[in-house]
Image (cartoon, rainbow, N blue to C red; front, side, top):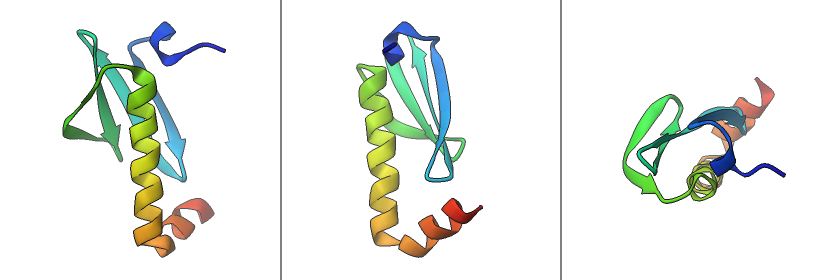
Length: 74
């Protein structure tokens, strides 16, 4: 298995129908949710950054499940 640190400096995907991305700038991983940089959220590893994005979306689905169902249906 290839870790995010061994890949390019940019990685993106869809999670629960929402675009997520991480970008390594000078060894600091920045996160993008729905194509928007999440200010003040910087991580030491790509794995931590991706995990935070997934947890953030999961938390949004708990607070607004209808939005997640709509995203998954699309």
